[in-house]
Image 1 (tube, helix red, strand yellow):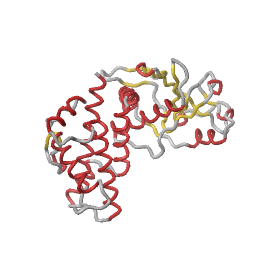
Image 2 (cartoon, helix red, strand yellow):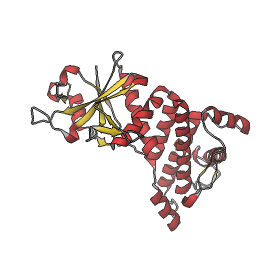
Image 3 (cartoon, helix red, strand yellow):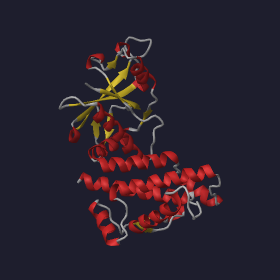
Image 4 (tube, one colour):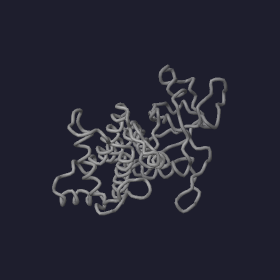
Length: 298
């Protein structure tokens, strides 16, 4: 049986543009590496026999090799959610939920007849779950790498921690530039706790890939290289106030800060992680995830 993917609106256009600028039809999106096909369905409106187009268009996914069980269906929805978080720093207030439907509830012209769904909770979930639209090219890029997340539990865990970090606090470059200009620092104890939580989850995103960084530098370097991460790549710096350092130095510095200021309820050190430091380490976690995804894609 197919599943309706709540939370995501089918793009208005019927085409994606690939990396070479070529038009790709998206009537059916086949993710061959995980045996899943996505198709379009339009939710039936409450007062129309034919349904409403446009914003009521959604995705339905199914397996070509047989039924997808509920666990696999949720993993698929989760993988798409964390992929969007890592690629575009996009966190949905209502994460996508896979809702099992029957093929016969979909008409030949792609209308999902919600009136034929007897379960009250399922019907309401389909009708009223908040959904957003993703630009075609952005969604296309996300779907290209989403199977890597789906097939690898460690990268799924890492991306989930990253999503939780940016869901708690995320600042764009313009925000950071303004914070630096105004010399703004967090003073509220609640905000400091939120920053520590976001910082801790950013570190857990790194840990999920390379493990707890060992004290032996050579071992840490080997762990990074094994995941496709160049430990000597220099990142940071620029006008955003973060230090320009190698990835391995940033990871070690982040570990020390986490241990002293974010990992414990009671500490002898000041709880003074600021917005610039958090932003820098969230970008570090994102870079490590994307390097690992690229490595696993080869």
